[in-house]
Length: 174
Image (tube, rainbow, N blue to C red):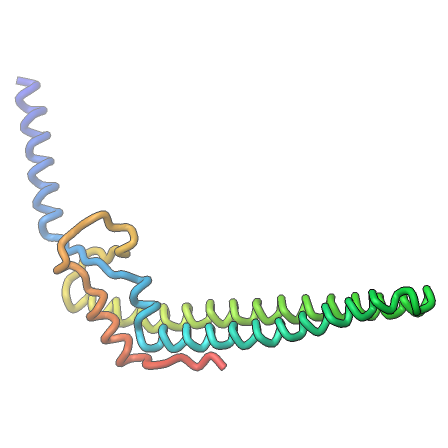
């Protein structure tokens, strides 16, 4: 009799659990796609890539000039006095240190702009997503990256991207 009651309780728990899960609606959102393929996301990426490329070109020319200055200094080493050579070598070292700090600052600036753009997009996405959840009685929104499989009908990515494109068509990163 004890086993019968335990089995009955176990079966009823399974039944109630399956009913609870049947009422929940789970959808999938591809956050990477939303951030990279929305109009604002694409615009931000294009701007950041252009800034990075421009900086790379600028720093490559500075680096080339520093290397030329170094080779010129090495060629003149035998002609210059020891004090004068040391003085010019120290000046060159200072230029190299300035170059490195400028390059690091430039990369940090681009990184911070990228983080700011992502934060702005996520802030704009939050009310859109919350509104969609309320309107459609969604229980759970999963990131597609963490999903192993599922029906394509549960993917709301394109709908959310369309809403985001209407809400925030571009970001001002300048």
